[in-house]
Amino acid sequence: MSKIEFDKYEVGQELPPLKVDPVTHANLVRYAGASGDFNPIHNDPDFARKTGLDGTIAHGMFVMAQIGRLCTAWADQKQIREFGVTFKAMTKPGQKLTCSGKIKRKKEENGEKLLTVAVEAADESGEVKASGELVVVC
Image (cartoon, rainbow, N blue to C red; front, top):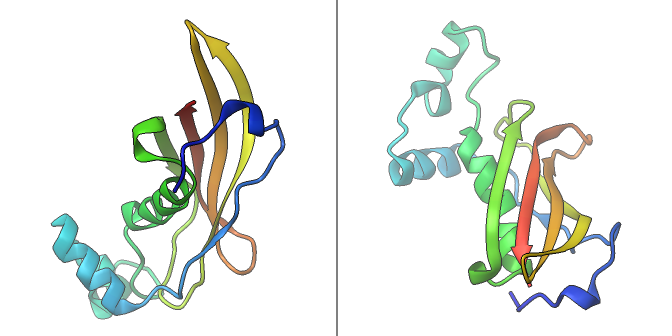
């Protein structure tokens, strides 16, 4: 993480990607404990199948947290003004996520220099699991 300087970035410039280790059942159990989200579709394969799923799925917020890791690896947390995502597809154990970002907009507003970054997490086949925006104050 480093302090982001407005003049060093251009629209279209990409952030260094973050490759995440394959999602495991253990990741999901630990995340459930940390988040308090014990919905059994995330940690009980039999229950998940009874609901019509092929097996357990990752918490959406687990995927968002991986994108958050990308953001905080790039920018100082103090510079983050906004961060949000929309969930697009389910993430299953065994899938490998890559989180990426691309500068979408540069603007100066009310004496502040702002960078807006399009961010996403996709699996190894390119299916986007979550996408959104990060706004950084430089």
